[in-house]
Each structure stands twice: as C-alpha cells, then as structure tokens.
Amino acid sequence: MNDNPVDKEQTINEANDNLSAESAMEEAIARELNTDDNVPGMENLAEGIPEDDPSDKLREELEEAKDKYLRLMAEFENYKRRSAREWKEMKETAGKEVIISLLDVLDDSDRAAKQLETSQDIAVIKEGVSLVFNKLHHTLQQKGLKVMECKGEEFNPDMHEAITEIPAPAPEMEGKIIDVIQPGYYLNDKLIRYAKVVVGK
Image (cartoon, rainbow, N blue to C red; front, side, top):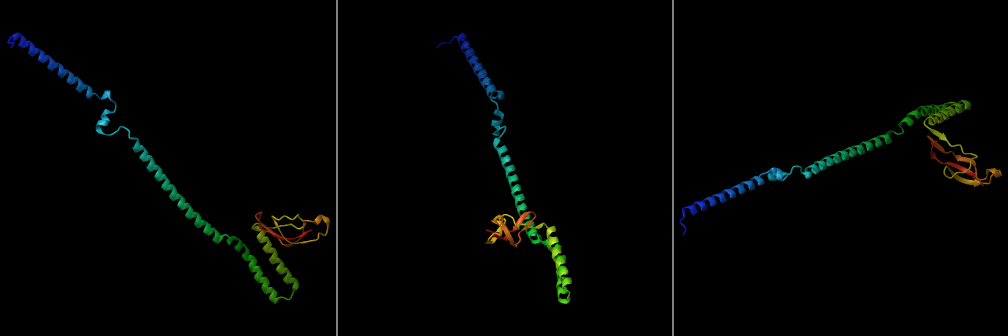
C-alpha cells in the first residue's frame, strides 16, 4: 500500500479535475438543449399547439361555404314561392283588361237587343247591329287581334286547314285558297287560330 503523501495529493487533484470537467460538459449539454434557436418551433411544440393549424382555416372556410349555401337555398325557395303566387295571380287576372274593354260592347249589344224587340224599322236595326260589330272589331284590334288575309294565297299547312278541295276556276288558282270558311287570327303577330279554307286542285 502506497502511503506517500505526494501521491495521495496528486490523486485527489486528478479526481477534482475530472469532476470539474464532467460538470462543465453537463452544463454545456444543458445549455444546448435549452437553446430555442437550434430547433425552430420547439417553443410551440413544447406547449402542444402548432404555430398555424391548417385544419382551423379549412373548418372556417367550410362553415362559410355552408352558410352561403343555406342562404342561397332559402332565397331560391322564396323566389319559387313568390313566382308561383305571381303566376297564379296573373292567370286569374290575365283577361281582366280585355273583359273591361269589352264591357262597352256588351252594353251596346244589350241596347241593340232591346231595339230588336221594340223597333220595326229594319234600317235602324241594321245600323245599330253594325255599330256594335264595328265597335267589337275595333276593340279587339286595339288589343292586338288581327285577321288573317289569305284568300288567293298559296295554301300553307302551317297556317291553313284545308276543309275541302274543289276544281280550280283557273289554272293559276291550283294549290291556292279559293274561299275562307273560317278566318284565322293573329294576336300580336302570333298565330292563335288556323284559317279553315277551300283549296283549288
């Protein structure tokens, strides 16, 4: 066993040096682990909350789109109900303007009917009836009604309905309208009734 005081003191000094070196190394490692600059985002990860969570933004956009969709559907349903109500009202009152304009003609017709019962003057009766007819035609023309003039015209199945065919009185009348049994009519330039005609062959 070595009892030399010098050797003991040297051994103690070496042990102290080793402890100091280990402590310095531990401090360095601790400083390295605690340095936030070495690993970006470590402070947020440590708290368990990412700096920017993309799912939150997507959730907000989804809620916004859903809200817009629900508003749009509600507006569309209101539009459908309003349109249905307006269409029903229009159908119920579509003929109101025409009926009102024909009331004067109806009044004249009533007066003419009374005159037929009391008057013996054929000329006066004919004049009264003629006035009623003229007023009726004039009122309907003001509303856009127009009679189809087709006598002597080429037969057109898109506009005319042939009731019968008869021998043409002249060669140039073959395939043309010789007589009109029932006139056709336009309403604001739109065909509303075919003309029933006799065609030459």
